[in-house]
Image (cartoon, rainbow, N blue to C red; front, top):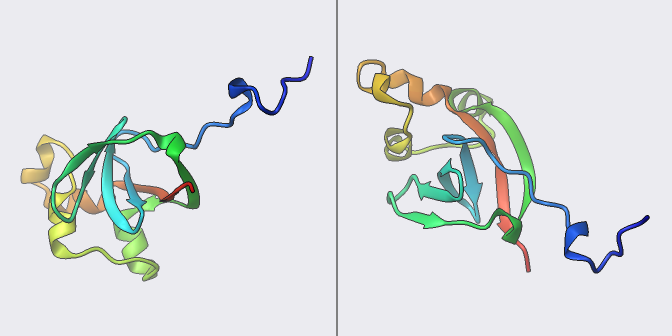
Length: 108
C-alpha cells in the first residue's frame, strides 16, 4: 500500500547531527545537543525543530580539517566556545577534533 503524499507519515525527516556536532544554522555556527543548539558566537541556546530546516551542505569532517581546507572559517572565540568534554581543559586542541556535520537553512 502506498502512503498518500499529503499524509504526515510520508514527510521525510531532515538529517540530524549527533550530540556535540558543529552545524551552521542560517549562517551561524552552533553546537548540537539533540534538539537544543548553542550558538558559538554568543553562547545563546535555542530549541530547534530540525524538520523546519533543510540540510543544504554536508561536511562530515572535523573543525580542524575544515579550517585546513579553507572552505570555512571559525573565529578564535567560536573555537573557544566549542565543548569537547572535561579533557578540553588539559587538551584544548581537542576542540578542533569535533565533527562538523553540515549547513542548514530554514525552510520557507
